[in-house]
Length: 311
Image (cartoon, rainbow, N blue to C red; front, side):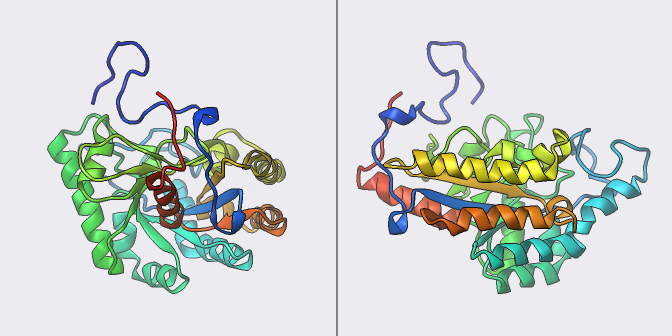
């Protein structure tokens, strides 16, 4: 679905919907904010397949270095070996149900992590094939469809459950990705950071919803790319929640945090995440849930005619 020059929005992936024109939205227990924490488990390959695309500025290590870039690969691998356990402990201590975005190569090569996430009660959503293999418009439709099919099938084989959600590696999509995700039977996608509520995507097959991540609170975006002090990052999470809590009556909001264990799971950072989560969970008015739980609740409200918007 390429962009078109025309009046209004130049694509048809979703309807434009200003917040004041929407109906009320409530979360379970009268909560005004639904909190979803997505934890990324993404594998970085030594040598990606020919024709695949990896961001040149991919975070980790000392930046771009000649092959073999041991520092960046092993820096990111810290998340699989150490950081993930620390992050999941922090979430459990604050009664936050994790949503784990797991790519195909992690699911295939780290069965211990798959079992651990399942035993911890995590929802596992699809995260493409690896951080070294982004979806881009350079793919043909057939190539992208097969990429999605392999990602979903491999994750289902590893976990025993068909994933319902999708987060593209590095938020990567082509102009046809939402249509192909819906065609593959997915329920929600997390690549579109343009709202404070879930919303329906426009697809010919199935019913696909966007679950918008708070992009500026993505730990890689904030701590690595924008070089934010970790103490300030913790304060931003608290301040964001406080504003969403204020604005969440009667139109409930979502706060979707996207975390990377190789980064936020470092021993000198984890305490700031714990402090932010304690603030969010201590004052009431919040419903901590998985991505599927939040999207399903929104869909129920939509079907009952309690949400709406304008184009």
